[in-house]
Length: 578
Image (cartoon, rainbow, N blue to C red; front, side, top):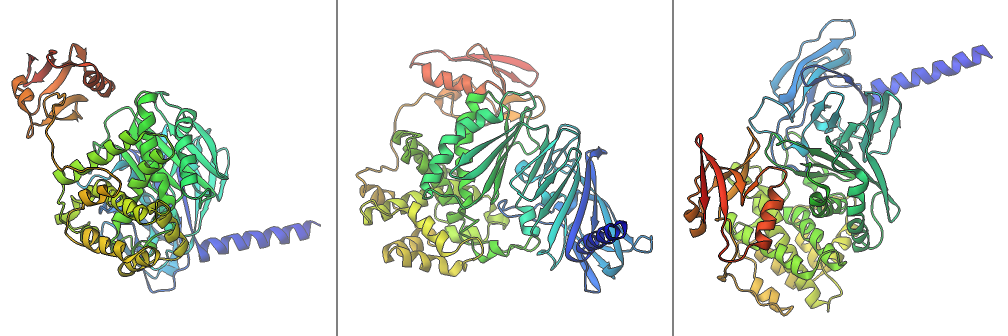
């Protein structure tokens, strides 16, 4: 009996070692051992057949449209040989290591630095795409920041063994996870899925929502406990269920995770936002009062959640075969981001979560933003294909303005020609059926595929206004639904002076950073660029209350009322009253 048991254990153990060394990457890291915002990572590599192995960290990841070179945050890279000696390697650039005779590698180790709190300020990584190491508080593992890959070996299994502080929980969209009190083991199908699956570790504040059979995890880290997972779940439940109906009653995923990190200080990038993934989305937002956060979460969550359709089920070869170190960009950001942004607002008005006036206000603001801040005649397909070029990168944000307006115009055209029966909602579902998770389309064939599903008129619209340089025909499009479009009208509006406000990261005061479009009211107040607003109408202005104070001013002030502003200017205070 003992002999049989010994043989059985030997077979199992031998098989386990073989699968680790031959067929998969075996990574381990210990979150309980942090040194200077750095964590050590160890890799037992898969078997490499070539005489030279090229080990890489991503330069860019899907959804960011910016080159970050994550190898910049790696140090103390060491290759240990099976003979117990260190093996030599060359480091051609921050992301690439070349190792001769990789069959002799025993393991590789290196340190990973926290990108949220790094001293490397050039090309700062937008927080939802970066890494956070807050010892015994919170760890955000965007896996592309911790784990590299061997060139041409992306399609092997990745096994992660993560030691964690006791009581911590791994929030993720991944399902193949064995959770213990002090250690988790996670299996991921390949490197693409690994990068697509962030993990947030902290003492859990989590809850689940059931949306049409899909388990939706809401996980929140709120340092001052201002906002709970249950509160956010209750506020996004209605929009998620509306999206389920919008997508035909079924969702294409079994599990989805909202990973929400709330910060009580200014981020290193100076921005907040989210990054979408196929089975999750990661948010970095200000820790404001719960009611302030509610609509923001609805709008942002609605956008990110719709990415379960695109690019998960609708994507080009450039995305399906994404090259992490020499990427080729797709022409169709108008589809991935623009139509997703439009759908995020359309679903809310369609199912009564916002009224029609609110919806059109949002669209009108996007018109103003697109025409005021971006090149309105730059072909969208060209911008998309060349988005990494510095000459066009600043135009990227227009995908959320003009991209959504392309969706609005296309939706009206489709519904007008089908008596309301077929719009972009149905088009996206048909495209998802045509392609799916495992089938990529060719960039050059997308318009033809859409034409087959719709009409020659739609193809002409896409060629003229998406691939072409003509501005969107709002007057003609809105006339189809009885709306009158006027490009510019003059009207009286309540104003604080036509100034641009921001936050001084050194003291978290509200600062005037732009007076280029200051109006007569602002000139009467004699604002200057760099003024820090201390009081607004006798109320101390802070990062926490600025939105409420300004909203109250807009909603209650009447023509002729006085506005009192106290500013700090070059070591002296000046009180202005108009």
